[in-house]
Image 1: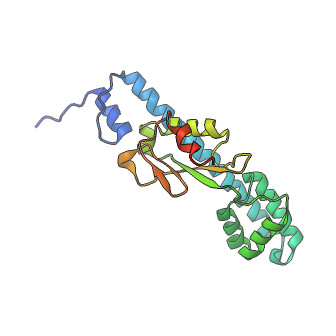
Image 2: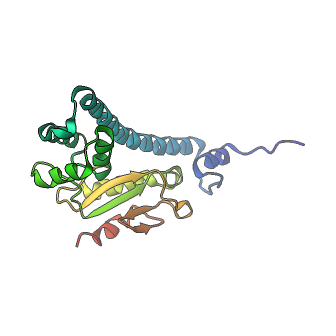
Image 3: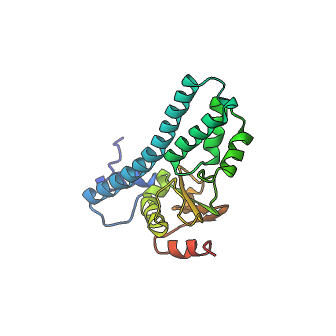
Length: 207
């Protein structure tokens, strides 16, 4: 029995749309270029966020190795929090939890210091925007959606807008692949998002 021969275009569409052949008139070269660009953008996003958490681990290792009983020295804890903030621009709750777990500092101690020290910024945003950066959404324009949100808010993933209204993050999958590309604002899921409707979606939460 002869093996079925799949045309080059279809093969590539299978690669970038997970088994669903496209109906486009793109050339093979254009398909490769599009797939490469989406994957490159996705990797750059992950690289940026991974680097932040890698720097955090380096910082925590340094404090763990060089300071004994750090949980009893409030000045050292303040210093640590300021250095952590330099990495993330603010102090996310998951980062505070990681500091607590790694160094044995009680979480309420950390959150209280963040509230009391004016130079420290906690999660003081009003709305969290999560853009799916998974492969399914990526194949359907996820990178363009993220770029449009970045432009609308004038921030990059992991950052908070200057007015404290929005935090922008990415997530590998929102579990809504059939309606990709997807994004979430707080607990509201938006499906089949387009670059054109980004401003209108975000406008609802500016009030």
